[in-house]
Length: 174
Image 1 (cartoon, helix red, strand yellow):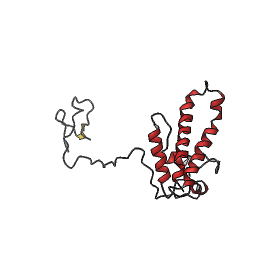
Image 2 (cartoon, rainbow, N blue to C red):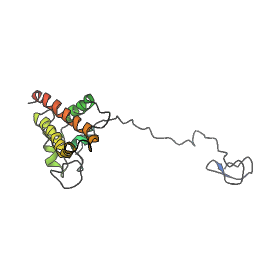
Image 3 (cartoon, rainbow, N blue to C red):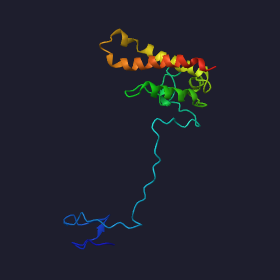
Image 4 (spheres, rainbow, N blue to C red):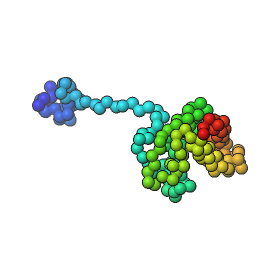
């Protein structure tokens, strides 16, 4: 056991156990064996898709299929219309969603997840268009009072731009 250089009392956790000692901030030198090894963190890729080899959590669903609070598949797969999300970024996100899968549903969200059909299918693109249009229609009140709800307009504009883009590529899918 190491003793304090000033008062000869034992050092605890690298500090003098005597709180009145002026060297109470004195620390023990670290040795090769006393250093705590930190686990290597694996850097997480921003906007990386979740692991689709596992079932999609039951919290991912639609209010059309459940009364519980839920997250849409688009949000789960990292689609966003937040500030800073340019048309190019959103189109790339939508393209990844169109290609993602196969999607494995859980027992609670099977109807919703299977409505997205197979990857790279026309039905998946149509389903995404339908969801975006449904969200736009759900915010009808924005257009009823533009001055009051003007902060929602960027969301609406991005949604409409994404629907237009999806409609323009719809012909590529069979």
